[in-house]
Amino acid sequence: AQSVTQLGSHVSVSEGALVLLRCNYSSSVPPYLFWYVQYPNQGLQLLLKYTTGATLVKGINGFEAEFKKSETSFHLTKPSAHMSDAAEYFCAVTFQGGKLIFGQGTELSVKP
Amino acid sequence: EAGVAQSPRYKIIEKRQSVAFWCNPISGHATLYWYQQILGQGPKLLIQFQNNGVVDDSQLPKDRFSAERLKGVDSTLKIQPAKLEDSAVYLCASSSQDSYNSPLHFGNGTRLTVT
Image 1 (cartoon, rainbow over the protein chains, first blue to last red):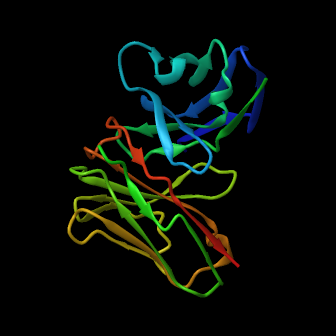
Image 2: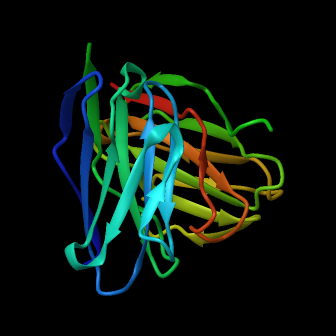
């Protein structure tokens, strides 16, 4: 079955530290991959997406993600965390234009 | 451009009561989605419309949930009768194309509490 897994439901980093949020998928066909961010009491906002082409994708707010087919991963990174990055982050995947499947989410906390 | 509008923001009802949520997508967006987000989980697609037609409602509990988009613009999601496990945030999203290559724009959601 096709699925997406986010490792770690809660990640805590210090301000200025590297942010790494992990996402793995299972599929036998090439996926489209997305990261969404959800601030408290708001809807989801697209951070970045991978469909085809360059495997390193840059998004908004300094985030980027790299599609690694051999590892079936699409981890989200940011070199230096800011307090405003505190939010819930969702990895999502669609296979051949099918429905979007979301991971369970990772809550990012940023300590001053 | 104005974003996806949803109302109400919060709703508290007792089990077995009925409730309705409203969504107005971004102007010109043909595709509209309703998602259910239970606390601690990612959003789950309930139903997808393309204009006023249903594309996917395979995960909609049709014995109690219904949705319509009569004129291909705004949409209503109804639950009747509600159960305790329906407590969740109901998110509406829209996109310009019937393709997930086109990003989804989400509303702020309606938080439903069933007591």
